[in-house]
Image (cartoon, rainbow, N blue to C red):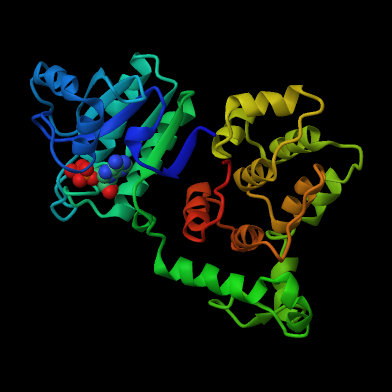
Length: 337
Ligand code: ADP
C-alpha cells in the first residue's frame, strides 16, 4: 500500500530514506533528531556541518551511515505559534520538499515522523492531517511507498465524538460468540448518536431503503454469478465514472497489487484490499457485501474490524485515512496493511 501509518521507532526502519525533523542548524537536537544522530553515529554530524543549515520548510539530504536506511532527509518544521502564522504552508512544504528530494534520489520508500508535532508544538491531530493530505496528493502522481511513523498512540486524535460514536456502535452491534444467545434477544441499536433506531424498526428500514444507501439497481447490474472480483471491480469503476488509476490510488492500493488483480487469474485479494476498493468506490453496505462475496468474504457481527467498517459504510464516511485512524485507535489492523 503506498501510504502506511505505523507505530515504530523511525531509526529502525529499513527503507530507502527516513526523514528527520531537524532544526535550522542541522547540527542535531532532541527528540527524533537526537535519536537519528545517535543511531547514525558521528559521521552524520560531520556531513551535516557541510550543509550550511536549512531554512524552515526546506529539506536537505545526507547519507545514513549506521542507520538501516540509505539516506536521511533533514527538514525543518515550523514552530507552532497558534496556527495563524503560516505554519500549515510551511509544514506542507516540509513534506513536499522531502518527497521531491526522495524522488530525485531514486527512493522507492520513505518514512516520515510527525514533523513539528514534538518540541515544536504543532497539535498532533493537525500535524497528522497535514502529513496525510500532502503525502496523498504527492502519491496521486508518483509511485512510492510512504510511511508516517507515529511514536505514540496519542498522535491518533480522531475526534472524541467519532470515537464515542464508533465505540457505541461496536457496543451495540458486537456479538461475542460466547454471549451470542444472550444478546440475540436484545434489540440492537444503530446510529445511536443520531436517532434511536432499532434493528428491524421502521426507522432503520427507511434508512437502508433510501436509494443513496442501498442502490438496488446497481446490485442488479452486478448480479452476474460468473463475475469474479476483477470483473466486478471493473464494472463498478465504470458505473461510478472514475478511472482505474483514480480508483486504486484512492483505495491506497499499490500499482503492483492492481496489476496482480487484473492479470493473475488465480490471485485472491485480501479482505482488506477488497474493503479498500469498496471505500474508494464509495459503495453502500450492500454493494460492499456483494463485492466481498465475489472472493468468498463477508462482514461479521463477531468481528470488531467488520463492525467498524460497517459503521463507516452506513454513515457514508469514505475517507480511508479517517477510517484507518479509527481502526488504529480501536487496536484493529488498518486497511491495506
Ligand atoms: P519537532 O521539533 O519537529 O517537533 P520532535 O523530534 O520533537 O520534532 O518530534 C517530532 C515527532 O517525532 C513527535 O511526534 C515525536 O513523538 C516523534 N518521535 C520522537 N522520537 C521518535 C522516533 N525515534 N521515531 C519516530 N518518531 C519519533
